[in-house]
Length: 621
Image 1 (tube, rainbow, N blue to C red):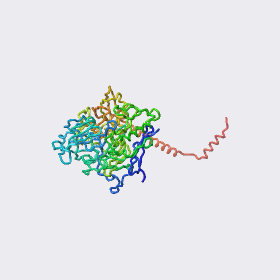
Image 2 (cartoon, one colour):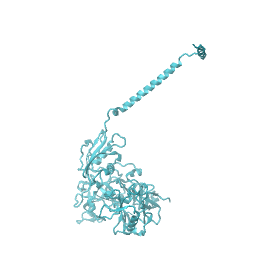
Image 3 (cartoon, helix red, strand yellow):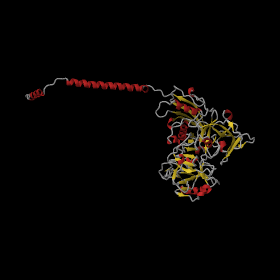
Image 4 (cartoon, rainbow, N blue to C red):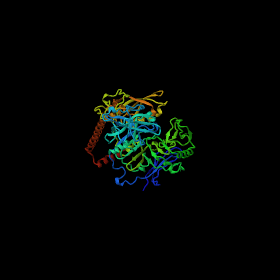
């Protein structure tokens, strides 16, 4: 069978990192995690994989697909430590930004009754405001509260954070990108948070792991989606991405590895070797099979190796980067392996190696390895950094995980799917004001707004105030522009910086959103969607941009045309008419002239010759 493979390279001295995954000792194909032009030496991370098992009983893998939910991802793995998606709970719907986590088995949001919950980006869930909310009553299948009246949950994480609360059931909506109708689902209503869960900007967790409370398991149990989901994390500079609950038609060159649910409750793969600089580390393959084995976890930021594996890996890396300067990491509490000087001696980084390095936050041009020791835990943990700009399909039905290298910001186009409609509104946010916005364009806060019928929108303006730690915001404006475009679902070229003023750490930015291409004005639908996103606080920036606020958004009519620009079409038509009439007159004159010449009498040639000869014989005086 022909091997399916695709190649990727990272430019940073001569480190080559291979992660080898074998099944039955048979290497059939390779998955490379990025595609970066290289002028000098290369760094490559490779996952040799294998084709899927025979699925002839059900046709080609994931070809017959029921409904699915296409959803956008927000934030950035390395800036925020996570990616989030939007989920709407209740009637009317209450919106939440939830971290997508394959290592968690329950979805939870802060409850209005929470006694110890942090300040997050959205208001807490209010059960009393939802007409469809019901508590999950105590039963033999759940852990009950002390009064044995209601089911409760509790989750603790490796970084010492925890979440606990009661279980409730309500309508869950996945946005207008979804083919799915809103579904009844059980989720956690938090009463207590600790650690990172308390301090994070995101509201809560969307559990995608294996378990009865997992949102995936619940939808599969209802037979509304196939037993599969996919995640696609955006790259280092732009973040974002996409996810799909349910099956998709797998790309022809997607490659798969087995994932045994009996081996561990997590999504595991079989890791056998790591190569650095072209040489395999001298390790027994069993080192990667300790505890839970090798786990792929979307909710973990970096990659973590067992102690022996990390010691060998670190030693090999240090020998391979002698030409670079070893520097301290951005946080003195951690012993990060960081290097600078990559651009001073011909070892310039042309593109960021996003799948195993992260930028040093304090030293420009410096990078740190995103692979660490997993303490004394024998588990090998591969976090989201490993699969950036890679579509990962968790085909639970066939116990496989598929990998397909792609640009996650263009996933729908890459999969030849039609562009999804805009997501459901999430309700207005009181911290935003409508400013000078035209009243006919002010959202009402409920789905299904009617677009204005006669208004022509030339462009949309709004202000953004930021309080950041940067002394100079200008170097980050390109990144900020990309984020604005992503959050408003417009092209980068449509976002224009109108004005920027700064005072200390405070900045005031005026933005304008112009029509796509050379159009003179926006469609009402496009303008309404942008206004909805602004008015409903659906613009979310990474925490690195500090606190921010959007206000005074409004619409502007198309630029008025004056003088020549107003009448250029009439002038062109008039000139064309004059030119045509002139040419017609000239042609008519030529035809008339020719007719006149043909009607003149003419003499015989002989008589003319006689006259000429007589003239020639006249004597000279």
